Length: 458
Image 1 (cartoon, rainbow, N blue to C red):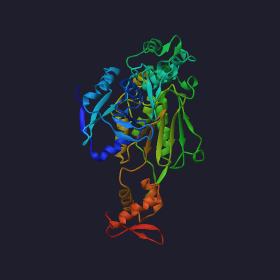
Image 2: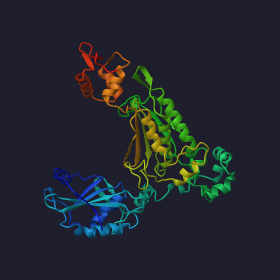
Image 3: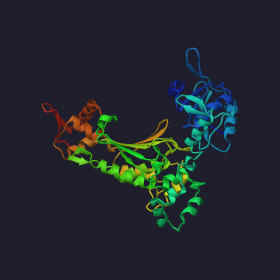
């Protein structure tokens, strides 16, 4: 076997030895058995991936670590063979040997990718990563949860006992769909062909897509809640501008309904510019991120999608982890549908919300850049995917201040913080001081305002 080999720089050795073990990193001694190490590998592959460094010893008495690498690369062959045996066709890991510049020994770096399938350790047990721990998936309920998280099992195919096929056949939604789709369809045979019902009961996908009010049958997991907070800080009930708005109906109507409501609310928010200006977010960004939340959320979790609108940002929280091998770092380049049937069938609606399948998030990012706004921030928590769309200019604070002064006579610290997104008064002062040092602005002390100098660049 051939592996990458890198000589590690001396000034990075201490950083590696003292690396904090967390959700993405683990340190192991070279004495660890391949079977024991396989449990850690399983836990990373079944979570979000990570790096394991083998060849760093930690004293259990005082928790001090030191480099204790393999003398030869071949000495790690047992570990390499174990990795190959876990999932021979998955290609879910990379090995790099980090060579000490003085000791000439090797630490084995194993970079584990998140996998679409479930990876078992050599003992046949499945493990998942939680903080800096590996936890066994030791019950049928935990196994089922992992299958749903990874998209191995599709909750969209589960039967909804309270439904009847007539709930779809007699719905306005299916009639609208049938009138629009090409070629013509007969409702019941088509639903059967698409496996959207079993016996006389609709599946989750059939209920969400083709009943007028899926919330009757799937309460607390099939709607969108929209909140408007009059603050740019932390959400607080006292900061709610009004009662939360609930968007219900079939998934197709939910997407367009939520985008329209969010857009209307945003247009009521004013920011300080030349006077007060309307906040502007690209509709494409709102549409694509809301569509993504609706189509790829985990419908087995009894929580509605949450959209929170602040003075300076929009937050969209979608229940469930990222499916398959998708991670925060590769989400723009990877595709893995947790609900493939929903994704495929909603694309058949006229003016489908996901008409550019696979390009939605890229479109969202590009639309923000066109308005010179910072890209959305995507995070994955224990049970949700969290997207923040910030109203922050893609420019330095100095550029924003200079731009503001092109059409305004003066600027104050509080105005500077509003237009740049800087929270700290002292940090804002530092921006002003840098511009003063360049001779562009000066302070009028009695009024605590900054004005342009003759050197100001128009």
